[in-house]
Image (cartoon, rainbow, N blue to C red; front, side, top):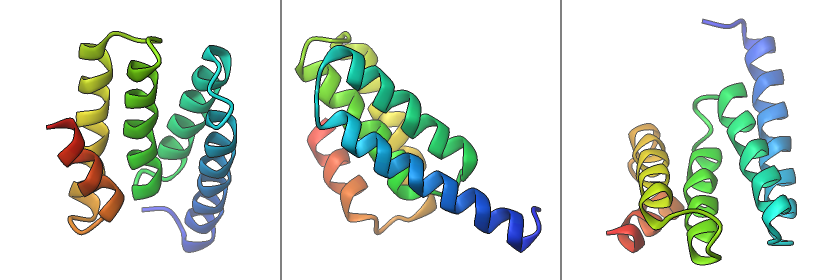
Length: 104
């Protein structure tokens, strides 16, 4: 278990990565979507309990499928895993529940 101060710094850095990933993903080019995907995965590594990061990993995977940047199977597997993690952390996470419904 990390000390509270270290955990808080990791959570803050994680949230900053999520915000950056959302901004980058908004541009939707292949390069930007890859960068957004890397940023949000970093967010999840920094704070494994960041439900928003896990949900965004799933959202970006589906966006990349819809834009023809990755194969449907690959995107759906990534999205399912990410949504599963988000819902394991918070079963009432609205974004993750919505994405789970869309995937199925």
